[in-house]
Image (tube, one colour):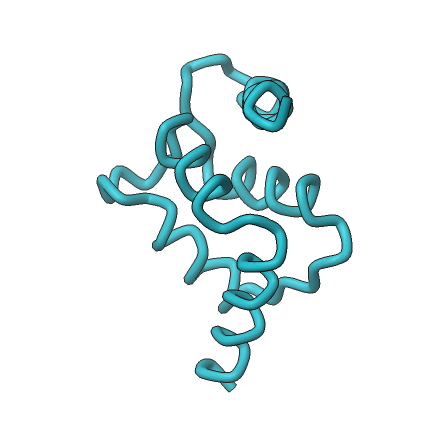
Length: 88
């Protein structure tokens, strides 16, 4: 069920249907999956850099789903809070 939800979110955010998300589309996906998370631009940029494992400047479904699956909601919030401490 979660994999299907992840795919639906990815597909809906991939406006040009090229199989990749721009940084803005990836940010929208994070905010949709974690609506209560407070992301400033520094934290968001760190997340995107982490997601973009092939350094293409875009996030493909494999990168996106690997990140979302690897960092479940609790781990994701912990990760964001840790980066906030490091970057402040």
